[in-house]
Amino acid sequence: MKHLVKLIALLAFSQPLFSQNTADEQAINKLVQTMAEGWTQGSGAKFASVFADEHDYVVWNGLYMKGINPQANAAAHQGIFESVYKDTEHYATVDKVKFIREDIALIHVLAAVSKKGEGRPADPQVLWSGLLEKTNGQWKIIAFHNLDLEIFQDEQMREQSPVPPQAMYASWY
Image (tube, rainbow, N blue to C red; front, side, top):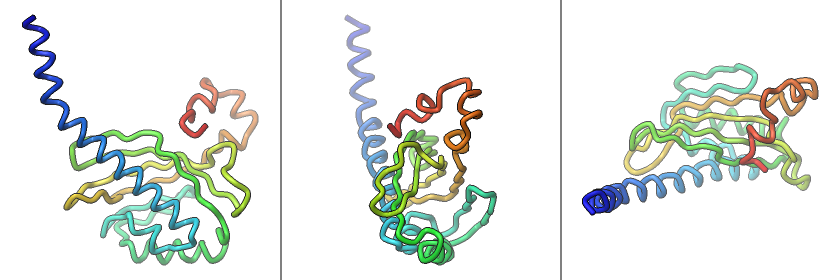
């Protein structure tokens, strides 16, 4: 009986923390969807609206932008939305959220881009990680790192993988 009382007390005290994480996870998912919508709409401003006033951004090809602001991020993305990624759609699936502290979260997101009307690609094309900070009740990305998922582009790499790619990236499917 004594153990049951302790268990009930533990569950009662942990519920507010769990609820907070659930609300925060929903807000983080919304942040990722805002980025995807910004991309699909061709809006650099909307895409960059989820980034902190000062953030780091690492592109899949190794381009490393330290301490940029949302305006610079928006301008850079607007340029690619009007050229190489014109008329494309962005798909994103949050794979993992890990709260480091109540105001710091690490996220991993599977993503892909396709021409408008082609639909969601069968496999993810990139995996990006973000370090997010919650300030004044709002989550913002303070560090972003995007990498190309070459395993889906190389048959030999897939065959030599110790874990099937579909298992590693199961949340996409």
